[in-house]
Structure formats: C-alpha cells, structure tokens
Image (cartoon, rainbow, N blue to C red; front, top):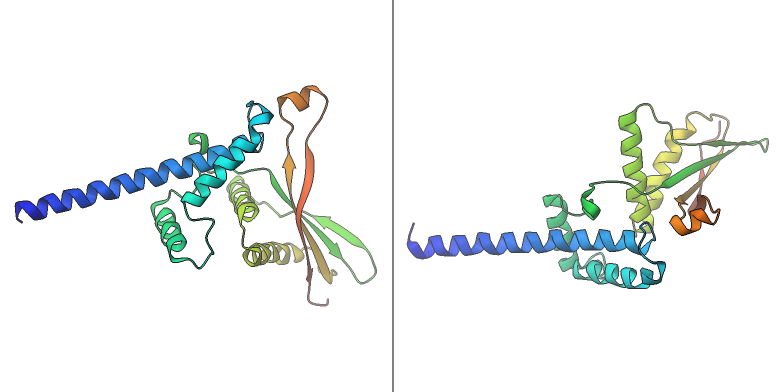
Length: 202
C-alpha cells in the first residue's frame, strides 16, 4: 500500500468519524430539545417556543422535514438506524419511553361494551410494550401507526370472543410540571388518536 493510499484511507475514516459524531450530537440535541419543549423539566415554560423551534431545526438538519421518499432523508435514516443512533440519546438515558397509553373498547352485538388494556406477561414484555407505544406515539406516518394499533387490538380481541368491533384509543398521560403540581394539578390523559376496527363475527 502506497503512502498516498494510506493517507486517503485515513482521511476517509476521519471524515466518516466526524459525520458520525455530528449525527450523534444532532440526534441528542433533537431529543433534548423535545423534552425541554414539552415542559418535562424545570426550565421556564416561557422558553418552550425556543426549545420547540430548536427541535424542529435539529429534525430538519436530519432531513425529517423532507418527503418520506426523499433519497437524502432515506440515506440519513438508513445510516442512523444501522448505526443505532436514531433515538435514545436525550439526557444520556437510552430508550426511556414517554407515558403513552392504549385502551381497547370492545363492542358486542347485544350492545355491551368491555374495556381492556394490552396484556403484559412479564417485566420484559412491559418494557417492550412501553418502547412500542413510544414508537407509535412518535410515528408521523398515519398508515404505519394505524397498522400497529390494529395488530395490538386484534391480539387483545382473543380475550373478548363475543366482540364484533373494537375502538382503539391511543393517548398520552401528561404529568404536571413542578409549578402546576404545587397548584394542585395532577396527571391527565389526552387522546391523540382513535381507530375503529371490525372483528370477525363470533
């Protein structure tokens, strides 16, 4: 190997390292600005618009503002997912999910209604479900979000053989910040999406 080829190889690896490091920093900043903009910290609420603008800027730098079929967006997404740096870097706490919740409302032909939550068989399942709900909550593609919630609903439908339809309600549990807590506010549940799915007749 000649000296020039070794120099080119070192330059290539150095550039790749710099690109990788920049992407890690941008993902970290995007996730941190998201948490700050949602009021999950003790930062003043007056700064929320600044944090939200900063989050949007970091997301745009990653190409998330482009159409989903855009080659640049797909290339950046492919690299960040393959390298394992696409999420989980906010406050150096990987994969701490938000407080998303899904509730199933099963309807039977006689008009009766039964409510259910996803079944959790173990702590590991609970952790995976929390991460899945977090992924669903942050998914911007409506078709993918609906398909994932449909699969969860059909899995829970086995426990309700008389049901002919299910309404799936997906929301987030919003925790009050420190100031709101001292004023007497407690957690609240905000509905984000609701889907109606038909089940096979009993």
